[in-house]
Image (tube, rainbow, N blue to C red):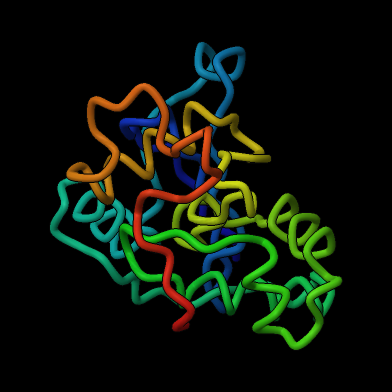
Length: 179
């Protein structure tokens, strides 16, 4: 049985879909979709909703959720597994993730897998940036990406015109090589 729901969040309405195996989809609805939503969710989603609420209230840094991702390619699932290891409030580059997967030439493939991430926020593709420190490619737009990064690390991201030093290309939020 498929459970569904729509909840509000600081980045807009979130559409959730779960099977008996786990969460299948978490999508941030677009402005055009926002007007036609009916908020509410099935009982099976209560734990996921509570975790999301805690995340948005700065009370949760690591989600404990099962996933149902069987329909997706193994490479995508491997990339998403690595994305889940990026610490709350930190970022990594597509190149760093490709290097972790043992092929530095896979940066574009990592970007493609991130673009097909069916579970926004919980599989944190918003924490992946370009090697020049730019907020590149996010399915829901860079303003949503910036909002999520600010939420996770307000000391580094709040009240800045840009998250990164555009002159040096250096990320200001202490990218580490440790996964």
